Image 1 (cartoon, helix red, strand yellow):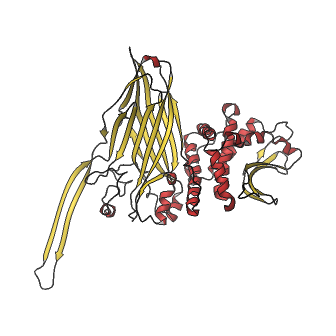
Image 2 (cartoon, rainbow, N blue to C red; image 1 turned 45 degrees about the horizontal axis):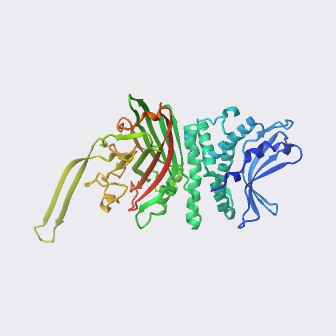
Image 3 (cartoon, helix red, strand yellow; image 1 turned 180 degrees about the vertical axis):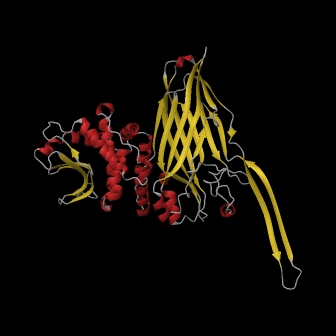
Length: 503
C-alpha cells in the first residue's frame, strides 16, 4: 500500500497557483510519474490561462519527454478568478472547483436520468471538515476514471495501479466518506455506481489481457453510529466478488455482459439502547432494516443491445452478520432470540406421465397420469446463534422445490432450469416472489425484530465501547428467462466498527 507521505497533494499546488497569472500561461502537477517501463510519459493535471486573464481551465494530460501532449479531459466550466488578488484561489474558490470536479465525475455514470433533480451542493468552505483531503481524493478519483476510458493502452495499467494504490488507503477512504456525507444518499449512489462502473471495466480489461497484477477489491463501506442507530453502507461491483462455484461450460458473451455489469449495494441498520439495571447493564440491539440490491451499472439500451436482458442477474442467497464487542472485560452474557422463518408460501408440485402407442392396424394403447399437490415452503430462514460473546445472524434462501436445499451451496437441476414453473423463473415479477421487484431483499424489524442482549457489569458505565460487525454476503445466479444452464455463486466479506456509549 502507498505511503501516506507520497499521497499527491493537489490542494497545496492549487493554493500556490497565483503565479500563473503573472509569468506563465500554464502550470503542471504530476499525478502519476513515469516508471522504468515507460520512462518518457507522465500523467499530469495542468491549469491554463485563457485569453481572458480572469478565466482558468484545468486538464488531465499525458506529457511526453519529446514535449508532445495528449489531452484526456478538460473542464467544461471555466473557473473565474480575480487575477489581481494576492490569493485568487482562496478556500471558497477551491470549494467551487471541487464540486465542478464532482460534477465531471458524475457525468461518467450510465444512468444519470434517475438523478436529474438532485442538486450538487456548494457549501461554505468553513462547513467542510477536511477540505484538503476531500479535494485530493476527488482529483485522484477523477484521474482514475479518465484513465480507464481515455488513457492510451501503453500507459493505462501503470497509472491505474498507481491511482488505485492511493485510493484504497485509509486516508483516501475517510475523505471519500466525508464527501458522501456532503453529497447525500442519492448522489452517493450515483458516485459509487460511476466509480464502480470504471472499476468493472478495468477488471474486465485485466482479465482479457491476462494481466499478472491483481486488482484490490474495490469494496467501499462505512459505518455510522448516531441517534440510537447503527448503520453500515456498502457498495461492491459484482465482478470484483470472489467466485465460490460456477458451472462448466461458462456462459455465452451476452449473458456474461449482463452478469458482469452490476453492483451489490447494501444497508444494515440496527437500533440500540442501553438499560441500566440495579446491579447490571443491558445493551439491547434490534434489527431495524437489512437491505441488499443488485443494481445494473449500464443503461437499459446498452444492456438490451449487448446483454441477455436486465433481469438476468445475481440475487442474494445468504447473508451472515456477526456482532462482536471488541473489549469484553465487563461482559457477563449474551442472549439471542429464537430462530424464525418468513411466512410460508404455497407452491404447487405436479408430477405427470403421458404416452401413446398406435401402431398401424392395432387397437392402440394410451397411458396418461397426473398427480398434483400443494405444499408450503419458507424461502428465507432466519437463524441466530452465539459463539463466545459474538452474536451470529443468518438469512438463508432455500430452494422451494421438493427437499428445500440451501441455494448458495447447491446447483439447480437441469430439469428445474428447463421448467418454466420453477420458483427462480420469472423471479422478479411473480406475486409470491422471494425478492423485491428490482431483485433485492429487505428484512425489516417488524418481521425480524428479535433482539440481541449483552449483559455487562456496572464498571462499564460511562465508557464508549466498540462493536465489530463482520459480514458475508453470497450472490447466486440461476437462469431467469434466458435459455442457459450456466449458474454461479459469488461471495463478499466486509468488516466495520461501531461505537456505543454506555450511559
